[in-house]
Image (cartoon, rainbow, N blue to C red; front, side):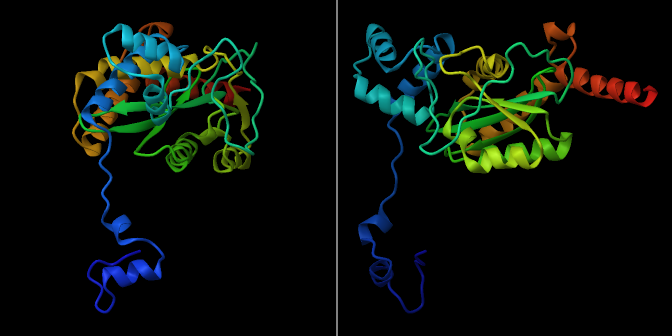
Length: 280
């Protein structure tokens, strides 16, 4: 709101009118230290192996590896990364205060066609001097990534943008499954799903396998792409993620599909279903 080159008002005058201090205007966020960024990368890698590690277990693990850390630092970094450990007790991803949660609808459900069930999740993307967040929307039956977005914050907007793209390109799913994180319990997310007639499903508390397919996606993405590069900028991260996701969708063989890529199975099944409907 402050114009550095305003013709009549100085920066000090503008700050007084807006009731903020001049120091706030001149302050530049320094970001995380190199040490913290290195710790966040170690936490991210370990969390892929042991998603049940909470703050205490992660702290012990890093201390055993020779890192001088305490629980206060690890708690702050894991919260910053958006990591929610899977506990045996009910203490997993929590919705924001006042947000409604929904039951898990996939238990015993036979998923046998594209667009019957979609899932969505957010993951942390380390870079050389910072980090970003990636949200992806996946078709449960074929494992095809339908849409994705990268953001430097965990606000819900980038999740809704990805959802809008997926619905626009492929039509709405019958069911959308997510965890109970604040982005997916927000009004912006749930209202968009309700308006297109999609039923909302959320992982049960303490259930690490409820959204397992997208968790496998994150593991493949990080070990086959993210950890092999040291991205300097957001544009590099976006280009790298786009290249890998295109490879994942259109070229990477998948054992569950008899070695066929996800996108091939998705579109072949869509066409087969259309032909069956015509005959019927």
